[in-house]
Image (cartoon, rainbow over all chains, first blue to last red; front, side):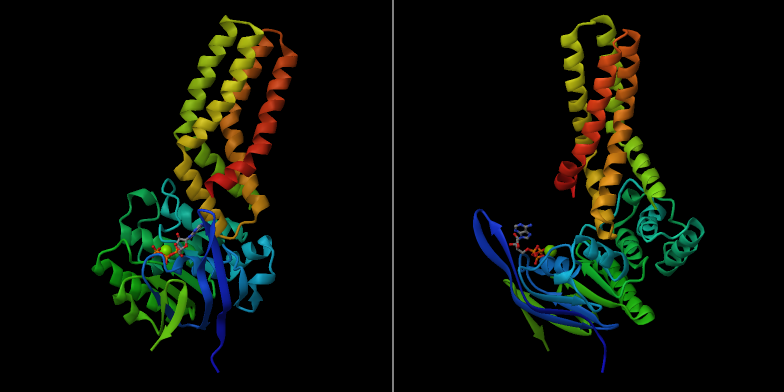
Amino acid sequence: MRRIVAIVRNVWKYYSISGRMIAVLKNVNLHVYRGEIVCIHGPSGAGKTTLLKILAGLERPDQGEVIVDGYNLTLLDDDGLASLRTNVVSYIPQDYGLIDDLTVYENIEIPLMIVGLGGEERRSRIHGLLEYMGLLGRENVKVKHLSGGEKQRVAIARALAVTPSLLLADEPTANLDWENAKKVLEMILRISKDFETSIVIVSHDPRVLEYAHRKYLMYDGVLKEAS
Amino acid sequence: MYRELALKSVKLSVSGRGMVYVCLYALASSMYIIFSPLSIVYINMVVLSLLAIVTSILSDKKTLHQYLSVLILSGMRKRSIFFCIRTYISVRIIPLALVYTICFSYLNLYLVAIVTDIIFVLFTLYSAYPIYKVFK
Ligand SMILES: Nc1ncnc2c1ncn2[C@@H]1O[C@H](COP(=O)(O)OP(=O)(O)OP(=O)(O)O)[C@@H](O)[C@H]1O
Ligand SMILES: [Mg+2]
């Protein structure tokens, strides 16, 4: 039996929008196996980002259960969710989640500082990541001077720095042309093979679906597995 | 970890454009205090200096938002994030605190200098939470 890394069970999430409670996620069920790429496809406003944030422990579900790598997120307090993000799950937001005014190197360094890695270990780890992501030679460039494709690769490097078991990518190709998008998707494919990382990609681009092992469709807060 | 992240906070705070505003304001207000030594001027300048800090933080809101996002995404605990925010603000406050302490001491107003510095310390401590809420 393949190992399951993440389970979302009967999750509901409500937001109050102009005084009214609106269900953004309606009884969502999802599971992700180890080393697998899952793609969630759906139109804007369907609730895809909300679901990823719940998996990353950045938002809490109002009902239901979320289990990642054996941890029941619904039972963890804020500090527990934070340490989950240092060790188990990495989330790449749609706007990359980088600091424009810092260099590539300094951006990737931050999560490694938080886990308490020493200077020398950090250097060799970052070197390895830059090499893997094809970014060697760019380490001292400020992020604001990078192209969209490079930014996305730095964002992935930052997220991989602490070797998570679950990687969540929110619209990783939305700001890229198809050539660069393909490069990023091939990189993601390689990561899932090399490190057996489970990866959830959210996208409204149907071309991304080709790269997934399993697909889900999301529409108006309802998630369905597609064949 | 704290020392390194403190250094990163200091670097972002110093290199932000708001740092220039704070320094210019500190110079301008010190002139005012020296040449118009009146209590109403002291009070005004201290109140305005707090506004200057708020303005300087707002002028770097993009970087601050990105910094807090990265810390949250990388799994930093809230208490440690507050530590980074406080470091960031203290760097902005240091030029003001320095100039005001020198001015008030020069005018032999030691009590005013101490009260002003206490206000700055309290501001640093208590503004971390609203900044976290607004910028995260
Ligand atoms: N913090 C919030 N407060 C109130 N409403 C929210 C909040 N976050 C999301 N929503 C609402 O929840 C719904 C789903 O949002 P979500 O960002 O998950 O959609 P999405 O599928 O990621 O869309 P997109 O493809 O545009 O990114 C939207 O209608 C949005 O307005
Ligand atoms: Mg979204």
